[in-house]
Image (tube, rainbow, N blue to C red; front, side, top):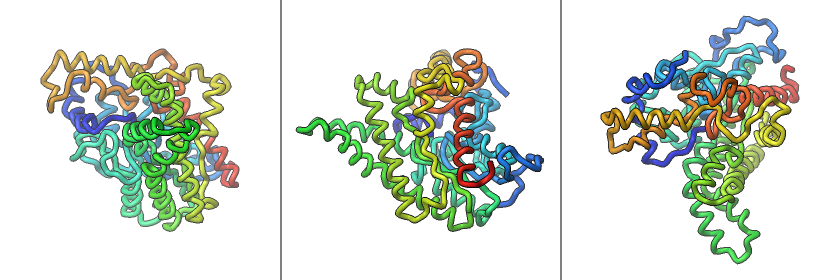
Length: 399
């Protein structure tokens, strides 16, 4: 999952590849088969040794874009870097080390990296130009989940019973279509004679717009199972309506209804996902992770899990953008393609570029839930991984 942008912004994102080296001086820098299993532990904490394979978007991306981003900014993953994301924590729990299958982007061509983390930040389920995409690897490469799965099969041929497959997708599809959906919903709700029918309008618009993406994701899950996978974890889309992104969008649009509408869209997508698994006859063959069952209690009682901030961002997103904007104003040569200094600055307002030196306060990676307006912090990723591990153990696999 990646913070939303419009089509113009996506094209302009390509300029980052040209500007990274110059702007990096303003930002403090930080640092199948079984050949991806580098942990020598005979008995992993999870009680069983498994090779983890992952498909999805930025929530699961273990560092596809790290070659350029880490060297220039100290970031590289969509969290409070150098922290790990949930897929990495799951892999470690089962005695594995999850690394990117391919690395590149932001000016570097994608190249095979030998890992099993196929997820890429910005990716949709089937659309190739995801959020932040630019051709020729000039920005995010955003291989869709469909392409990720096909590439895995090209690379490895099949899955096996010693693997744990993690898959998610759909959040970016929702974000890329969000503006259109909100406009359509607003228009149709305004025409209602019975305001209580508004939720039905939200559901109808979401069903027609992003419902097909959920069905496509299920077809990929069926392919994975058909190619030999016996342990598959399916994660639904987290409630974007409960993120700082939704709160900011509500303020921008001047409507307090925005978060609940966004939540309704996400709920509809997740409902189609579950229903499609059932229709395909594969519900019993996967571990379905309802992120809402984890996130809702966390936000209601954050201190129970060691969090103190659920509304702000652990990374200084505004300052990161402001620094880039100031740099662009002082160095207008970076403003190619008609981009303004402010638009240039907005490109850097993501946890992908976040490092220990760009945290809001010391320890924010542990005390905050959100790294930027939509992605989890290191602590939140770890907490979610623990939740998933419990759900997997409940099926009788490991402990």
